[in-house]
Image (cartoon, rainbow, N blue to C red):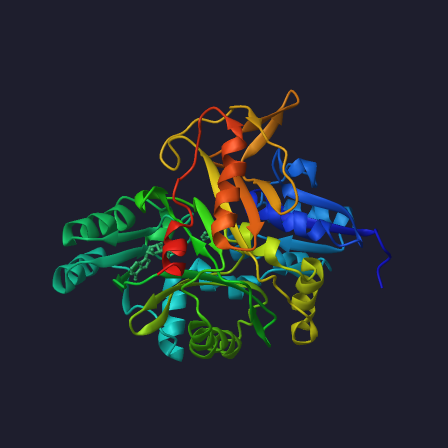
Length: 429
Ligand code: AMP
Ligand code: GLY
């Protein structure tokens, strides 16, 4: 048994998601030190930031060993895909997150599509191409709308929903000839266009059981009314009103359990947070994508609703004891409004001073992109803050999250003004 207040935790990553994870872990009284690698200027208020990049696996493992870290959490996709958890475990450090051979469920869309096909998990029909001529001929034949995806990791930007054959061809050429996403785009997946509301479901799984967290809804486009370029996510709400108990039951039966079993059958047991990106189509729920990690900014609305202790749940996942561990969520609602640098995700400037407002009970400001210079907190990156409110109703949560976001002082900051609108419209229908 570890003594109270003596645990050392290491969190790999440095965005708003990691800030939310760190604040939740901090609630466990057994935790003494939390190291964030690399963290950021805002996370520095809650953890010891160490300037080691999230993909510098060798240095991460060496740091963890030297500092006798008791438990590590690997949050971003890149280090997971590079085998960070495997290497930490080899060094005797237990870690939250899938091993490299399971992280492939996100790292290769060609892999995840073939997994779903093989095990009958509902998803858009697709074909995978390594030859550009064949890919071009295929879209010519099947027509638009159609979806073109880079096989590998592309910071959430490797997907083109093409309304015309011309757009689809351009996307294919950019990926396969123009090298737009480097090696990630050498293979492309071309997919049937699906329609319906989208739902994000993060889940805990230890390979034996899968426990879905409260559902959420992301807002991926930069502009109001879902216009403008795709971003990492401009805001989230939880729960997602489209995720009804009936849908949840179908997802468990047709998607969640079959996925866990499929990964086991492939010798790729998944332990960690498995994120299901779902579309609720007229034919039922279908998988749009899997992520091998907590979503960003989904985590910022999901973890504030978690009533159980996060660290306890994470360690149960690592040790395969999830079935006997309570994972309880509040029935309140949460909203997160992202404050981004004007021009994000295309072209933006950093280095503006951020002045945070006072926040009270049920409010959080998670810092996604900031650094400290001469004692001042300065913006650093596209997404700067995630302003979160937890309330009894979604309507109040959205209103209060905007109140916090609007009280932030950041000269070149901008927010989408309609976070939660679609969810509220669905609730009021
Ligand atoms: P992804 O990066 O895979 O999450 O895709 C980004 C976004 O593209 C998704 O959130 C959807 O809005 C859209 N998308 C992806 N696949 C499809 C599809 N097969 N049909 C329609 N929209 C899609
Ligand atoms: N918000 C979507 C993601 O984390 O991939």
